[in-house]
Image (cartoon, rainbow, N blue to C red; front, side, top):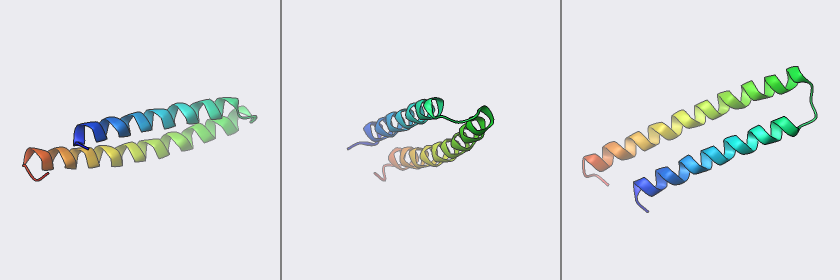
Length: 69
């Protein structure tokens, strides 16, 4: 599997996770403040995961560019 298809897979996986989490939160029976707190927590988690994924993709791209694949 090449790095381009791997990065595309992970991008799709992240988008699916985001959409699924958003739908679950919107349909969950909670008060407004509780839902906002959960959304904020999940957004921070997703931000951290996205930063880690971006870092891995960047490392792979640099490695590939140097011919170290």
